[in-house]
Length: 211
Image (cartoon, rainbow, N blue to C red; front, side):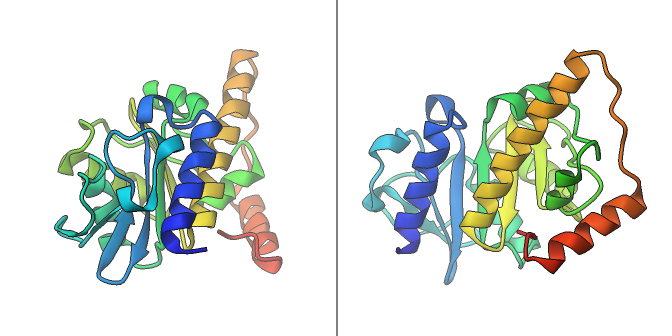
């Protein structure tokens, strides 16, 4: 499968899962000289390879005839700051987005939090969508992490591969659903300790679970 075909398949999957309402969200994959990103304003169900846009890290169009996603600055900033990132997935998945609207992150209430790279998944400070300020706020929230919530907005996940970034974005939504259910029941989460999380990371590394 080509990178373009992989990007379209991932976008359609996340859209079908309800993670991209009203043509929101965007995905990209690193390519030589820049990154390939989904276009602005097109329904994912009908997107074609010719609709994708290739940008360099300054946002200059290298290939494609459509405008890139309005969040291209976010993707460009992540690729510039995180050389290990091979792909970036940004969703508006419902439960994680609801949590971001309270400007809350996800603490270490479940061991799968460790997939995000640390002891929590942070929520960024608020900034308007599509701006350099949002990209900067996201980078702060992503420091030492592979996923973050964007305040009053959604989710960002990165991975060495598109499959990894997509899987992590799905897991963040799953964790948000569990966390909101816990809080909605009036229960206080019992958080894992640093030592317990370190054991989880070691277990993940032992069978290749790290994304």
